Amino acid sequence: MIYDVTIIGLKPNTYGAVLAKLPGGLERDIRAGSHLGCFICEFGILNRVLILSRYPSMDALCDDRARSPANDAFGVGEYLNFIERNAYQPLSFMADITPGIFGPFYEIRSYEIGSGGMPETADAWAKVVDERQGISKLLMVMQSLEAAPQRLLHIWPYKTLNARSEARAEASKRGIWPPPGSSTHLLSLKSELFVAAKFSPLA
Image 1 (spheres, helix red, strand yellow):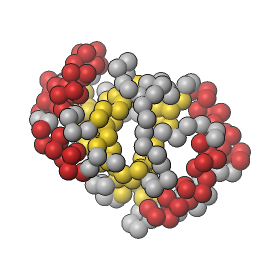
Image 2 (cartoon, rainbow, N blue to C red; image 1 turned 90 degrees about the vertical axis):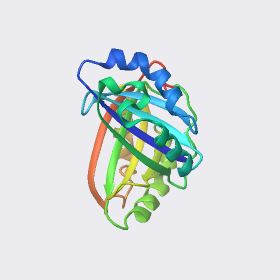
Image 3 (cartoon, rainbow, N blue to C red; image 1 turned 30 degrees about the vertical axis):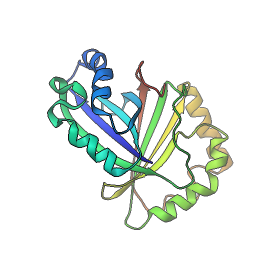
């Protein structure tokens, strides 16, 4: 499976208008794949919405991108400041995403990985990810197919912000997080907190 992560940057104070139109726009523009989630940035760069979709192949994703007009993506063109799209492939040990109620808070972390460093980074994750998932759910970790330098993107849902703090503290206490040996090739790290929209399949 291929996952598409689209960020749409909005004009200030337009969330209400955008969220009212997005369900129809998503149905219009996501045809070859399936819409999994729509999230509003709560902590990070504001006035942005993240859309997560799944596709059976890169060709299917490209078909949908070609059909979606850049100046009116998802039917909200009048409110757009910019749009960013990136394709990702799950790391080998991850199962596909199944929509459900896991949030409403979704922490989305993006790491830039140095040249040739992804295999070693993925191996470090594979050794401890099962134990880490026993503390709190990892929705997905995946590697970019288009960006350079390569990115590792992981998504963590939480019921509350306290649950996030407690899970991270417990993982650190056990010495399993960050995964030992996973930091060698990191160039930069970014973490942002999103909240699921009311119509998001991942809620």
